Length: 330
Length: 237
Picture (spheres, rainbow over the protein chains, first blue to last red):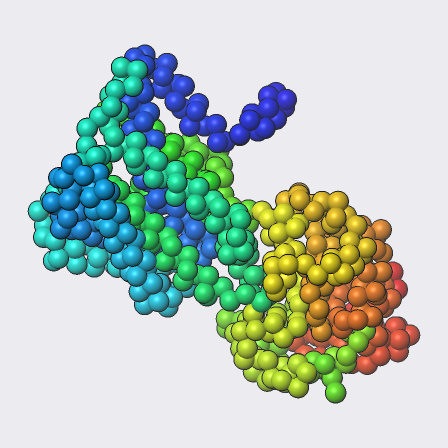
């Protein structure tokens, strides 16, 4: 038994769980083409959830801040990107892939810049006064989410906003009899690139080393001569920018968004962070992929259970590992 | 002039007043030991010097500069290192990463690194291991090594022998003796035998106030004073 446990640990440990879920789903679904479609959809959704949740996990882990307003950055990212894409509508419809890509890059860049700026404002004005007070953090950040929702309502209106997709990301490709949406493949690649970037940032740079150390013991980082406040604002802005980017990607995925997007995503983003473990980028990716795969597989196998599936998954994991699957060492 | 001078330091944590007018001077060189019973205020004193509580009343002067209002990171940059009671190592980081974080430039001075290896050979052996996997003694070695990898004027060390095996305590004592030849150490310690073997000067703190200061040799020779101030039988003395 012990040998089996060691073998599993050496092979990847908890990071094999998505593979296990996929294998079980393969058996239950039976049709390989449907399974492949659902798996790609789950991986793409997982990468977008990772973008939205990674910042929250770092902020939670490093700053000990319960930011219930995090999904406001997701909403703003989605709406800012939608507006930029609408502005460049002519480029999107063009057959020129260069114009397509440029419109998309502008939209995502605008969402990222807006998210980072909003994150700066949020941290300085809303979060900083309530450091070390979780109750007030919950109240004030939930309040901020409501205000953000109303601002979006006032700016973009209450009717669902259509999000145009670049021409080159429309349509599907057929692989082994499975129909795979191009946008989903694109979302997966973008998420993977961002994960790789974050991984390199956290593991190969001095700033990353400080962030990882700060997640474990903020006080000691200061006692070594570093100003953690500067790190806080940097991480908060990074997290907000990533959430806004996730929102922009999600907008393109859904193609129709409403001001309630942030509140809708809030629960699922928190589930991802809790399942993955606080302060860990690897854990967040694992949590996001598991949540998204479960939602897609259960939605296909037992649609009525789709909504409850993530709650059940979270309960099961917390009973097994109360600190999540791969939390940062504390 | 003293290296560190603390005058009338009052510290409150929440609604509790923990230190009341703490006053003592740490001369340059050697080991200065702060003794006292559990809960007397020793750890609070060290943390207050490092700026880890809200600004204390009174003054904390280091090399003639009042550092009581400085941020912890600025205090550290003045040349004061801190080894907390829980060692404060970053378990998810490797030994090498823990050490590199303690350097100002992100690069090691070869001479200092060689000295660290000589003092604590286990660290070289486990250089690329994650710090959580080290034993208690090795973690303590890492915590002290981090404090000496850069030139420092003063190292604050809080109960370094707590929970360690006698052989490790002995090795730690040797290391402290060598470190104190070039760097002043302010040591909080409950193991009186260990403190006595290292200390040149000392102070006793009780109920948040300094109740005795003097030479360690004099205090070690006066068992009646030890009993009165520490209410201990001086185990191992």
